[in-house]
Image: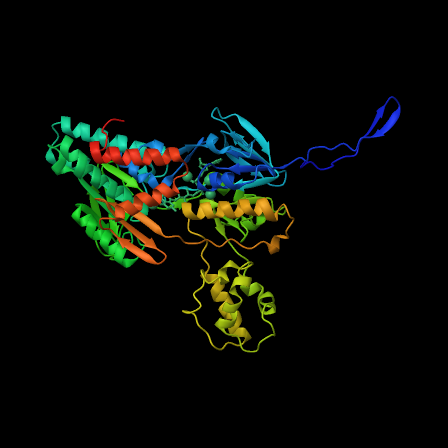
Length: 524
Ligand code: FAD
Ligand code: MG
Ligand code: MG
Ligand code: MG
Ligand code: MG
C-alpha cells in the first residue's frame, strides 16, 4: 500500500480510548501543467500518475503536431493527421489526470494559485504545488505596420485552414470575374515571408498545389499564379548547411518560386508589401502587389509570460522567462515553478562566478591551465554548468595549451558567453518535457538536492524540411540529404515514427495516398 501515516488519531469509542493509528492515503502533490502543445503533452505522457495528482490546463483540447502544419495549407494532409485529443493522454496505470479547458491569465507564485478564464470569460482560481509552464510563444510581427492586420500566420490549425480557405476563395473569384490581367496577377500572387523551415515548406506546398492540382482545375487563370518568398538574410534555410540552402534556392527556381533573399518587409497595406534591401541601404525600396500574404517569421512571448515576469523581482527587465539549468524559473523562492518549450530561456550559473568550484574538480590545483584539462572534466562539470559540455563548447576550435589563472578566468567567461539556450523547436520542447518529468518522477521524490540534479542539455537530432516536388532536405548529425528520389520516402518514415498515435499515422498515410491518387481537394 502506498499510503503513509499522516495523523495518529485518538477516537473515543464507548469511552474507551483506541489508538487507531489510522492509515490515511498520502495526499499527492498537485502538478498543474499549462499548455497542451509539445512541452505540456510530452510531460503528461511521461509523468508518473501514481506519484502526483495531475491537472492539465489549456484553452485547446487537442495537441497539434506543428511540423506538419504546412501540409494543411495546400490540403496535402488533413487535420486528422496532425491533431490528437488531450483526453487520449489522460489515463495511465489505471489512474487518470484531469483536463480543464481554460486559459491561464495570471500566476500568483507566493500564494501558489493561478487565475484562469473559461470560454465565457468566467474567472476560476486553481491551486498547485508545482506549476509547469509550457504555453509556447506567439508569432512576432515585429511591430511592422500592417502585418497583424493583413497577414496570415502559420502557427496553429485555425491559421493554416484560413490560409487554404482564402486561397481557394481567391481562385474561385478570379476564375469567375472579368478583372484585368494585372488585377488577376496581383490577386494570385502568394507572398511568404520568412525563409526558415516553416516559410520554405509553405512555399513548397503552395507550388505543389498550384502546379499539380490548380493547373488542372483552373486552366484559364493558372498562368497568372505566382509564389514569392522573402527572407532578410542571404540564405533560405539558414540553420541548415550552405549546400542545402543552395539546393533549396535552385529547386525553388525550378518550381517558379520567386526567391527574394536579402530583403526585409518594411510595411504592408491592403494591396502591397513594401520591401527593402537588407544589404544595400541606398537601394530604393520595392512595392510588391500581393493577393495573399503569409507570415512565417519570428516568435514573441504571450501576455501571460510578460505579466508573470513583472512579478519576479529578478526578472522584471527580461523579455522571456529565464529558467536555471534544471528548468526551474529563476527568482521563485520555493523552486516549484518550471518552464519548458518556447516560453523560456535557460540561463545557467556562470562559470566566471564559480571559478573555485571549477578548480576544485581538478585533482591538484594546477598552476598552468589548459583547455584539455577543462575538457577532461567537462562531463562532470556539465552536470552543473551545461555550457562546458562538449556539445556546447568546441574544445578543438578553442584549444589553449597554456593559461595562467587570469587567462583561465577569461576563458571561462568566453564559455559562459558562448552558451545558447536550446532553440525553440518541438524537438527541444519534447526533450525538456522528458527531462523534467524524469526529474519529478525520480529526483524530487528522492529529495535529491537541487544542485545535484544534472542540468538539461539538449541532443540535436537533425532538421528536415519538405521543399516541394517530392524533394526533401535534411541536415542530420552525420549526414545531409539534398533531395533525390528517396528523400521523400525518408521524410515519410521520419514522420511515421514521430507521430504520437496510430490514428495519426493511419491518416497521414491515407492522406498521402489520397493526394497521390486523387490530388488535393478543393472543398473545405
Ligand atoms: P506549443 O506547442 O505552441 O504549445 C503551447 C500550448 O499552450 C498550446 O496548447 C496553447 O493552446 C497553450 N496555451 C497558450 N497560452 C496559454 C495560457 N495562457 N494558458 C494555458 N494554455 C495556454 N519544431 C521542430 O522541432 N521541427 C519542426 O519541423 C517544426 N515545425 C514547425 C512548424 C510550424 C508551422 C510551427 C508553428 C512550429 C514548428 N516547430 C517545429 C516549432 C515547434 O512547434 C515549437 O517549438 C513547439 O510547439 C514548442 O512547444 P511548446 O510546448 O513550448 O508550445
Ligand atoms: Mg506545451
Ligand atoms: Mg504543439
Ligand atoms: Mg519542419
Ligand atoms: Mg513553452
